[in-house]
Length: 239
Image (cartoon, rainbow, N blue to C red; front, side):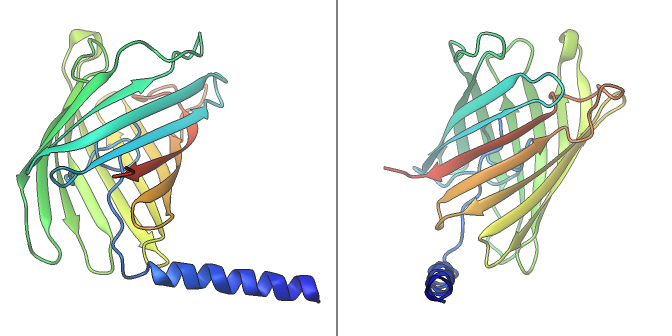
């Protein structure tokens, strides 16, 4: 009975802590490869001017059993621009790769309405010869908190331009303490679906859980990224 009372008190304290933060808006989080966004698809949100965040994602592929790690830093460099860097671990040597890739995003439309429609263009992995891409996305805010992102991406496999459509949905639960999300990239030869969630501990720190290229298997090996299950975190203005 004593243990049950202690558990009930602990649960009450937990819910009291959650309610204390309920009125504080959470921040947008970085995608796996850096820019503010969903799992793999960037959104039209950007970090506010002079704000910054750090993050990391780590996991393995159930198909290859290779480990993956991404670490990233983003900065609101100007009032309508976000820039950042992302690095990763070599899956064979299991050591951090030398050098990082640059990401940049420019906000083209900043709507001050309660439920805005935002627009942004950007480039990912700018200094990479094989993994860079460009994009233009819009993000629409809705009542009760959901956000819909949609737009266009283009990458350059084998030095040839490949257009892709992209879309994503973010849905908050429990006063924004949990945000479920899904995104998709699709083109003539590939389709990739990703699922994820963000668990917020306060308004600026989030734990990430992601499933990348969810439907890839040995018979369906088409997608931009290898299938992987990742866990990580992001933290805005930690110092």
